[in-house]
Image (cartoon, rainbow, N blue to C red; front, side, top):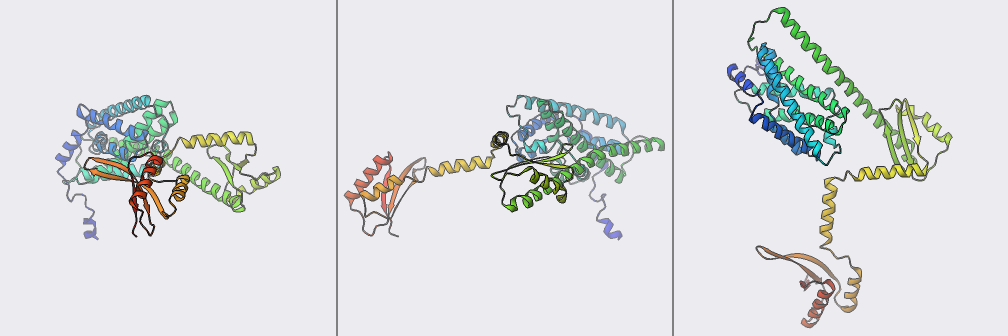
Length: 432
C-alpha cells in the first residue's frame, strides 16, 4: 500500500519552492508586454466568437496571460501572503476591465451582431463548468510546481477557458443584453475562483511555509470565508445544471410524443416550436394536411402526461394566415445560418457545372449530323501547356468502330468551335 502511495507523491519531481514562487510572482503583473498580449488575445477570441471559429478561440486561449494573477491569488491564500493577494487581486481586476473594454469595443464596431453557438455556450454556466475549472486548475498548479513543466499548461489554458466568457460579457454589453453579460461574468468568476481554490489546495498539500504568522482564530476565519464563497458559487451552478437537465429531458419527451402521436400515424409535421422557460410549457405544431377538431386536440392534450410532459400545453396551429407568416419567418431565420459547409458545397457544384455538358439539344444535333459517331461524350479538361500556362479545352470522345476521316473530323471540330464559342476543341476516338 505504501509503495502504491509513492506513485501519487507530488513531491516527486517538485521544483524548488523559491523558483516556483519567483515564477508565480513574475507572471502576476499586467504592465507593458503582458497587457498588450492580453488585448491582442481578447481581439482574437472576440473574432473567433464572432465568426463561430473554435480554432481561433483555442488560439486566443493559448496566448492569454490571464491565469497568472489567479494562480498568484491561490498561492497567496495558501501561504497567507496578504501583500501578494492584494497585488494579484489588483492585477486581475485590471486585466478583467481591460478585457471587457476591448471586447466591448470590438463587438460595438463589428457589423456582425448575431449570437453564434460559441457565444451562447458561455451564457449559462452550470456545475460541469465548476468541475472543469477546479480540475483544470489542479493540473495547472501541479504543472507549475514541477521542474519539467511539460505539456499540461497549454491544455489547462484551453480547458479553463478564461477568455471566451470575458469576450461574451463584452458582447452582452455591446448589444445591451444583460442576461448574456451576467451569465458570462458568472462563468468567468467560477473559472477564476475555482482555479484559485485548486491552487490553494495544492499549496496546502505541498506544505508551502506561511509567509506571515497567522493565529488560529484568523486562520479559521479565512477557511470559513473560503467555504462560504465556495457555497455561494456552487448553489447557482447546481440550479443551472438541474435546469439544463430538465430542459433536455423535456425535449426528449417532446420528440417521443411527436413521434408516437403523429409521425407514426402518418401525419407530416411542418412546423414545431417549444417553449420550456415559460410558466406553462408549450408545444406548438402545424401539419401539412391533417386538421384536428377541438375534441381531438383536447384528447391529445390529456395524453401529454403519459410522456412526462406535465404542466405543458399543446397548441396545434391551423390558421393558415398566421401559420404562413410564422413558417416564412422561421425559413428566413434559418437561411441566415447557412453553414460554411453548405457554401463550400455550392461553390464545388458551380465549379463542377463548368466541366459538364447537360445540353440535350447539342447532343441531338451531333447525332443527326454525324450518325455514325455514337456512342460519344463531351467534357472539359484543363490543359497544362507550360509551367505557368494553362487553358481549358473542350474534348469530344467517340467510340465508333471506324475512325472518322481527317475532313470529317475537321468539319465536326469547326462546327463545335462555333456551337461552343471556343477555339480549343478536340475530337478524339477511344480505342477501348
